[in-house]
Image 1: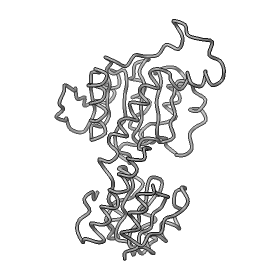
Image 2: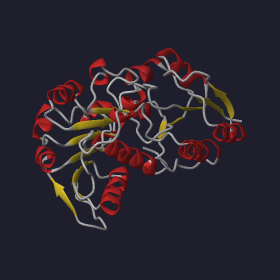
Image 3: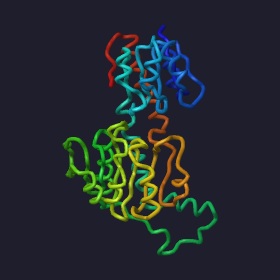
Image 4: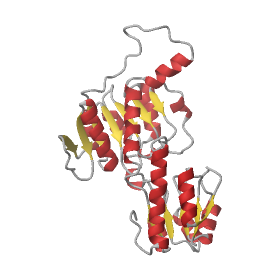
Length: 317
């Protein structure tokens, strides 16, 4: 039986299925793997199932003499893995697209509503015993229905967000992506990110992480946004220049923000925590049991195809 190292505790159904298929070692800790642990996993097992935070860098692969033939990433994003370096050492890398699409889009909508309607701020006020009762001008936020949403990145998740905005909230959809998409409703493509930012009431980030998108949302893009507009990030934390975002929120040059991801997770800048006009979630994008089960089962299907059936991984990257 092939050996498999799983870097974090998994849902019970995923663990049970993994143990049916492989000789499994599942780490008890939820902390990211250390460099030494990554090297030991590569050298001591036939395959590794890592996830976000397990930074399989070029340096790790350079120091390892892998026995492993595959990294089956638990998650759609894989910018924590140097894929070229992995392939150079003969490893296959796979991910779990599709399984995360609807859950991540739902999280984007959650953040849009919470930020626009000041839900986090209102709950903090109530819990602190500061609510004095309803009145006509209390905590007035922004009504989402009929507004314009700009989506940066129109892959699976971006399109799922667009459908929710169009059909659920009658929002006008605009987007910035590498190539225009065929949509089942009118959606306006932009080839200039700052022009998109200037035209929308809500700017939603749904691009992959990595060097190409690092600080894609910088001071100039934030400066282009309207003063009432909200920024929503369910992509990767370093897609946004956090210092520039903090400055924009502190000055009130944008209306607010909703964040599920951060540049240096789990560290969140104290300046963000101190602000009332930002909603902060602890990377809940796919945090539903059904979704995490689907992700785990997809990772196992990739592993089974390669290690047991001798086939290509269905979701190789």
